[in-house]
Length: 131
Image (cartoon, rainbow, N blue to C red; front, top):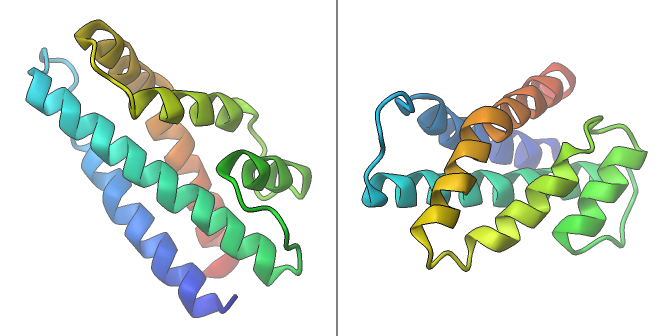
């Protein structure tokens, strides 16, 4: 995996997370707005675990192919240091099957309270190493 691909994926992740950071969660979000938050969360998650996979491959660690296995390897190798990423995988899996507005609201609360900060911390860690 090339450094330029890692930097490109990091750039894309940063752009998606900045959108999440700009959301005004103090106002009640409409169902459409909640859907947009969840969609950006899903995109940030996809970019994050694929970035972790790219970094693992760059460091010579290959084999992990699922988000959960990549995140476990990233924890072992200290690419990330917060086991909340494993809960994030569960939330991501649940978010793809949202048909219930109450569940959607709960996921949006998790995104606001925990996951945006987790993405921001990850971006800072990777920027320190690869920029």
